[in-house]
Image (cartoon, rainbow, N blue to C red; front, side):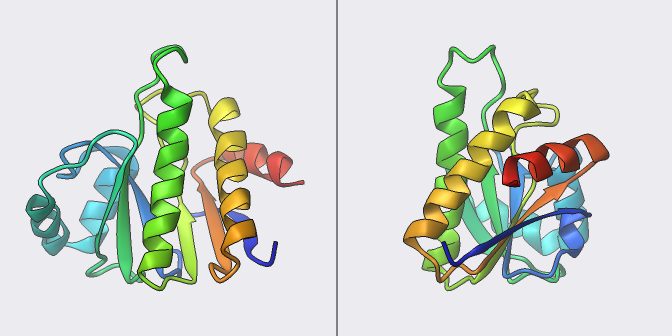
Length: 168
């Protein structure tokens, strides 16, 4: 694998990459947590661009310009709400990572930053989500080394530790 995976405890809206991934809801019209922070940092043009998309189903992703953010693109991935693990949550979350990476590649991105999709208010257990995320990204980079840099952004010490342990 030529691509580089790293983890940072950082505000995803300030990470210098070609694309940042938004842990979006299905309306794509903003919300709390990472979603709200990205919408605030990007400015009102992001909301207008998202309105044009007409929403996004769970497990899928859409791309817009990043407007006032340092990235070129925002990739809006709609993760699953945790329901105990029996509602295909892992398949839906894996699809979010796969689709986000495919959109980045299709749009010529060489770097991308991810938040911990579904691990906030959607309640997906981080100890299950982190290994899945790292596995999907690693598999993608093995097939597409031109995506040279993937950053997992951790919002607290616990997430930072989980990513670091998984990446060892």
